Image (cartoon, rainbow, N blue to C red; front, side):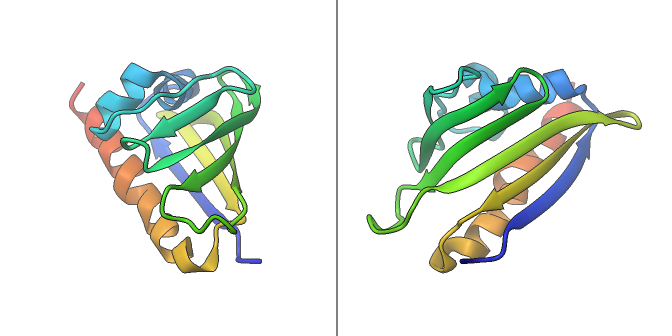
Length: 131
């Protein structure tokens, strides 16, 4: 098994705003610049980046935490879904996301590790800076 991906990032936004951006299709699409169909409902299927990543919500604590089964479309059929845990909390000047992503296949571990900042954190920071 690969090492867990662990990242923490702060934004000038409340935890509830951050949770909403991750779980609302229009907001998610607007902040990342790519079509997403996401949900805050437990058991709901989701996809983002024009279907490049997809999965299912396993557990949701509204405004606080989401746990998802997560996979990339280019993963091998034999690759198991990875598990993503995101916690949303208060931080000085805004909110914080603590991410733990486990079970990412070795062949995509580096890409996913770099992908979180590239496809989420940097665009989200730009979004909040511009408002």
